[in-house]
Length: 259
Image (cartoon, rainbow, N blue to C red; front, side, top):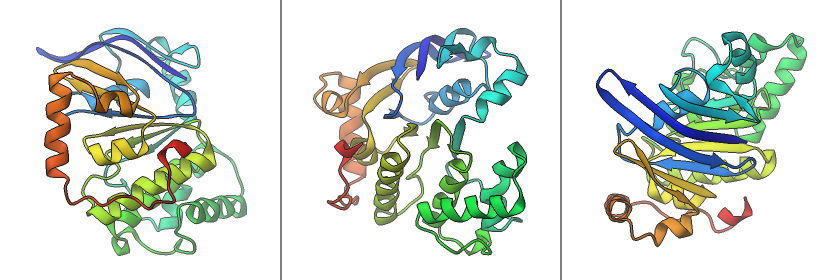
């Protein structure tokens, strides 16, 4: 689905990514982990065409995003959904209006059709009947669920997640992990996640990539990464596990391999 080939990006004298290459499989959950400031968000922005790399290619279904016109990139983005770190809801819109926003912007569907889709997506994320509520009335976990409903409103082929468990208490973070797995099983599409949460990563990922010091140091299955002898990866894992001792196991009926 997505192939990164020698992707390199600098901002002035600050090199953020250097010759990053990997293949992101369609229909799988790929998680990129790493400390803050290593270029995880920059990588996602380059994939969706918001930032062009200084060098390298980004192929999506055989199309090179780096040479596309703005018009073609705009069309391509209709295949994408995005769940931002804080949900990024419009505070002056109701929940229903927030979820409806991409549908209204990118389609010519009738109001009745839009309302039906909004209701379906909210039901899918476990928030049936809250269309008239305002974002200020929602908890952090609910805001992320509404953000996910909006991200899948146009039935995208790829959904990007920016730190989905960030800022949440352990129980709510586990619930978001379970929701991601449930949505992935139901939608059967490609999920790309950026995170520094090892518990979440080992729960949801089919493939894990470690970004560190401008490089993609490791890329493979969670099991392979957990047994890697790479000293940077071992230190990152040990620190994150030590910091995340408050995380509880996700519900036992949610199986990561079910994805």
